[in-house]
Image 1 (tube, rainbow, N blue to C red):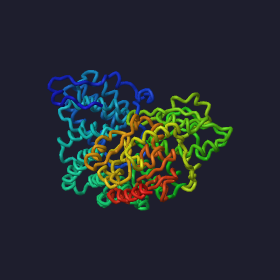
Image 2: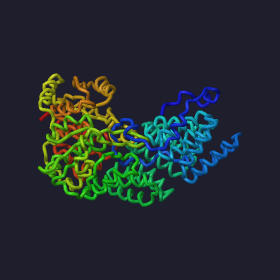
Image 3: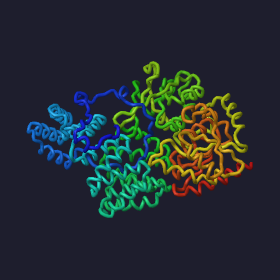
Image 4: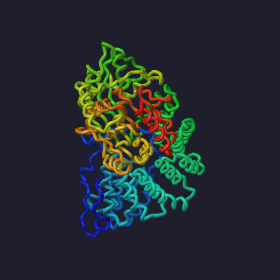
Length: 618
């Protein structure tokens, strides 16, 4: 969806708005996602805030409003068609509703209310892009735009377009400043854009006006979570739950805040309560997946891996849909002699971390078995070197209608495999306990010639211990940003004497590097001739040439750990990946620095600085 370049008033004053082709919208919703989807970054299913836009384009109130608009039409034939269409929506017969709305539009394609009805019908049919086009047309044509803006904003939010959603919610709130749902929805979009101060400024007067509305307290709690203030967030979730003791989203979000504070037992209790009192299948699926990671954080590994299959639930909004034309492998089926196609899953760092299993899987399959491996394209060369004799190909990940789909289009003759599996489904078999992780030096093999090359290149860096620096992730939305310390708080680490800091952080780092140079007097050296985001085989070699890598869990530190490079990893109080231990089972050489909560970054940075000074002196 493109931002509107004309206001609704200019559209109504004579400019002809662009509208979708009726013939295209009349087509049934049965597309090939692999043909129509847009290439997308890998998405990991995650615990997620349960505080998003509220409202329903087909609610009783919304349909009553559409009926009133229809009754003002001068053309009685069009009015009858649209009243029938709205009646069909009430009966959940969305195909019939869409056909009736299209019939009305065939006589007048400037009929704004018909576009709105068609948009509701297409949304309910799962045709989000078609629905978006209809809502856009309605927005340009209707004299009162706030209702359409609310519907379109919720759809944009659902399709991971928070910036566009915020613009649309602003239209709605401007027209209805006292509408609780509208204020809540705008605050959620602003939170996801890291505009937390503005979100608070919007929520504060709304709560003063409507102190009995639990959704407002709930959303304010998620904003405080985004700011890393879990303790304050808990108090707001407490109030939401006092007002509504059966508020499933409130329990889920309080679990989220308690986990940030290190209270995994309390988080598990809240998660169970949230599941018990929720009626939304998506909310329940999200909480079930969250519950699995809490179990893992508590060290209940066998139980946690069993529950971890919830990450693949079709009810989980951001769970990937695998499109693999082969028989799925089921947990418990024998592996000996199996010809197995393994598909990497979730984000890039997860693909690397879960590869911890692959040497053991290859051994389990035995001489009579074989393994195919489907990974992100940037990992292909590294994985081919690491697992000789294994067919390695790249997956394709596409986004379509708010969903993510992953396929294996480059595998030759998928039918020659007995079965396929997402890689993490092998965890219950190969890593049933934290003690089952081997003390293996590495499980990925960097190119030794490139390691030697980078050792030579690093001689040009400033003198001292060569330490790679990682301080953020490429995706830093409102939910994830709190897990990373502000760069300014790295000051005591960066001022450690005897250390030469090497930038291995992918993405745009110019602002942070300039801050270190101009404000702290520290030169963060940039390795020449390498794209830190794209050249992952080179990045792996570079990390192995360094004396140490320090940072948060992102793709690069996982690469370093998998290749056996020394790493210091900063983790949350109850990071599930530690599996209830005081170390990092995936990478035995890793030293962990555990944040008690996300409000105490100065303390953890001071600990790292002290440890680094000791290392530099050694």
